[in-house]
Length: 352
Image (cartoon, rainbow, N blue to C red; front, side):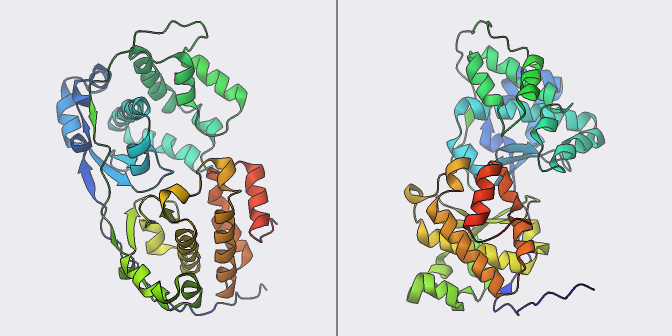
């Protein structure tokens, strides 16, 4: 019989009722796409109607790019990508995702099944590059990239998404008909407008996370300013199904997964808040924020020290190391395996 976990009573309260997701009309952020021939080839004479009713969820995460919600067919767009992404990349992402919208409209069940296939494996890029929904969507985007005059090496770089087996990627490039000797078309100005300044609504931190200003760990960070810091702290909600709370280094707000807030383990939520507050204290301002490069992020002293403190506090309130390790497995998305292994050791944990 397994011994029961020793659980300390948490000295804080969590409001687990996030506000409803906010949808924004596609045409308020992405203007002129209904006139693009690559889009009209997908929707035909119904282009204006479909684009007119399409909506987007703005996702406050620097690790979110774009995607289609396989439940309602609307788009999800990361605000960091929207603000900082290369214009050609943003444009092609929209062309790509609108092709997915067309697939969703044709066969919702098939699209959802194929969409979830590689997500269930932790976003296996080998499956992704062989996906029957991704290959035609990327071919559609590659054709448009060639039309607007992008060079082959630029298109290849656009197609790289995380680590992948070289053979799988080579086969994928072959399916894209990207030959080394292909001629480059004259550059064409993209005739659309993208509102890069769109942001998501923010809410008071203390409406959802109550009592943190009284914690010794928080007072050690901010001293007598703890109450004022948390009173002025804001949070933005993401409809992502991933369990996370993270710091938006650009404006100092916290990004909270709605589903995670609703049903996540309260001790892991507690640990994530402590982590974010440490990052907020140790790297104020974008100029001091940890680089998001996968290699340097996991070796950044600010990141390591913040996670060390969060792990110590999680243990103090009775969170087993095994549970902490499972929670941190999501960092595999942003770190190569060797970096992740060193990172786990550096923050005081052991892989079992």
